[in-house]
Image 1 (spheres, rainbow, N blue to C red):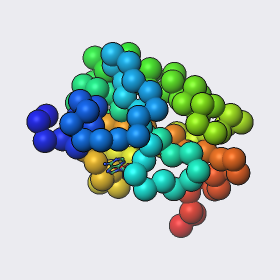
Image 2: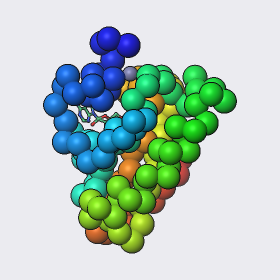
Image 3: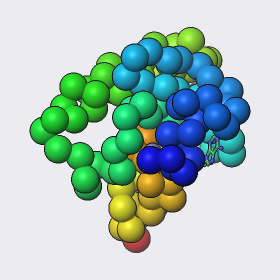
Length: 116
Ligand code: AMP
Ligand code: ZN
């Protein structure tokens, strides 16, 4: 995915405020944070969304969640956090490369969703 924004960030072609990287994952501060902690964790390998992921992605999907506590703790939200994965049109996903938002405090992040 030559022109995918998050593929390019993971390759270091577009600058980001990196907070974590390993062979499979890359994590960086959201450019427009919604809470004091707002980092994005992505698979280095392009996956469009949870709507297109397959059984073959199980390991990397698990690892995205497995690093979340470390990312939150190291970046100012040691007492908990929220993970959000917007998916597709209904989930109002804007960037078409799978990413988990990890948002946190110091204050509680607020209600899960506005009730309609
Ligand atoms: P989503 O609506 O779930 O697709 O979220 C996309 C997120 O990517 C938004 O929170 C944006 O602020 C964030 N974002 C877009 N471009 C960049 C960028 N260049 N660096 C960091 N975060 C970005
Ligand atoms: Zn991509």
